[in-house]
Structure formats: C-alpha cells, structure tokens
Image (cartoon, rainbow over all chains, first blue to last red; front, side, top):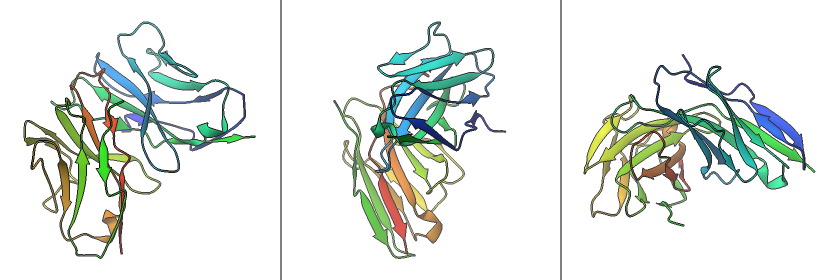
Length: 117
Length: 115
C-alpha cells in the first residue's frame, strides 16, 4: 500500500494565484515528520517545509504553508501568490519514528506544477 | 548555508563499466544516504550510512552497489557493471540526526546515463 499518495500528477495555476497540492499519508506511528520538496527542471531537490505530527499549528515558510489535518492524514502544501519560478515537481515525503535506525524518507510520486503568466 | 556537494553533475558510461559517484556531506552531519530517481518515477531509497558502516539498505542495493567514506569527508557510491536500467538521478543526502523532525540536505544530484 502506498504510504504517501499525491493524487494530482499535474496542476496548472495562474501567476499570483494560490494553489494547493494534495498529500495524504498512511502510518501507524504516533510520531512522524512530513516534508515537502521542490524539484525544478534542473533536477536538484530543494527542501520547502516540514510538519511534525505533534505540532499543533500548521507550518509556514514564507509563501509556503502546510494544511495539516491529522485525523484525515493529509498534509497539503499551499503556495500563495504563485510565481513563474514555482513551476517544478513537488514531492511530499514522510519520516516515521519506527522506520529503523536511520528513518529513511518515504516519497510520493510527485505533482508537476506549471505556473502560467 | 552549508551544502551537500555531488560530483559529477552528469555522467555517461558504457554498459558494463563501473562508476563512482561522489558526495561531500555537510561537515557536522552524521547520517548519510543515497537515493535514486529514475526519470519520471518516484524517489527510491538505496542505502543509509552511519558510523562508517551501512545501517540500512533497500532491496535495490544489491551486490552491484557499494558505499564507503574513504577519507572522513567524501561519501561515495560505486556501481559495478552498470546496466541500462541504472540510468537515473542519484541523490546524496545528509542529516544531522535521525529524529523524525530532522530533514535532509540533498545534493544537486548526479544524472547517470548508461548507454
């Protein structure tokens, strides 16, 4: 079973508008961390934002915010005021407390976001 | 801001050849990882490394692959007898700790093409 599900293979948004990228996850751990990464066409993986399972407030980092709904096991990324440079692949990932000593990241398939001028 | 450095950025190799992908993790990080991303597919965990030994490896990481930290700074991934299906982006990452709230810092990746 997929542990991280990103149901939107591709999304389009108009420049300056907000966009929400969906992520649902599956875990039986009480302690886990959720991460979003951006991968532009150049290929590098850029950390955007994280949310801890015990954090009561939604994480925010500049134009990025995470809409964390623990009961629904969703961790959607919201990008406000989209810019052309936001066009990229976006990956949701999870790190579980009981996933072995090194707690590797488990990844979704990603969402390709295109920002239109 | 500290970076994870990967070299080369691109490598083209003939099938059957050996390649070594190099990484310099962030100096105070203790945990090191290799991930692979085949074009258009999800990111896959290969191996994690701590205290100069492999701490976890995936089913992908078979005898064709090896890792080492030869000099206390570099962290290398060796792929022996490369196959066409080894063509992928390979990411090195390091982490200060393994608490769930600790993210990774990724390198820019090495795009390996096997021809």
